[in-house]
Length: 362
Image (cartoon, rainbow, N blue to C red):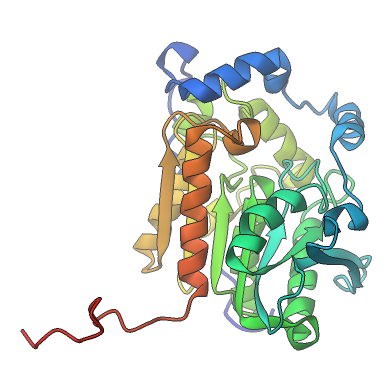
């Protein structure tokens, strides 16, 4: 591997294990989210198991909306096309869905996005309507969504290598895509957030393209599933330790919880989080992944890096998808938008006052 030496593995961010807790002492859900969960019934918490995984994948593929390119163009509001780019050596090509607001000229900043779904479900198309509505129009940026292979049909490092191959290709062809190569944010939600964190590590160590930031939304980071919150939210959160363990086993196979698992497989295993792009990390206080995500932000700070951490009170996993009009969901979207705007806007002279004059020397 070119560039930096390979990182040490096996230590990583320590997981704070603790006694199995019950729902009585789990953080309460936000009232609007609690009502939304109640309306969905028990199906919202049905766990993924290895025994039912194939059936759940089929059900998800049938039920999850997969808009066409024509749908995504939204009567001409967006320019959308599908790209087939070379995958890693020995791997199939990777499909990228490339979208931007129509009629805007000049190189645009880019959100290079990896969808959620526990690395076992989801697709590149279904996430785009919200991304285009919430970010592309508001911030005048392009969005490229990656159709990476899913587990267990493709195990680690297959999905991550798909994401890296697409990212490297986009950065190399930025001019032809009318993208500003110096303003690319990598990001994702849940499994996609974990892949984004892993991609930041991988491109750093390979000397690959340098993203300007990483948007990590409730990211899956730790295959060990042994934090306090993973026990505390068992059978409570919409994505609990049973589903989490199933997803990691599907991705890693016999390497699940291995002592020498590479940090690119589970970024919480990393012992070197230095020289990474600034991170935005968010998680709910009432979700399984809370403690591993908070620990990851803390480890970035301890390594001398920059991370903005939001722990949304009473939020479960995927809360803004579950209840998009809840006040908490609106607050989260606004916070992400503000961070993206800051990270994508060139620095300005902050010493000039509102009157256009600089203050006198103190």
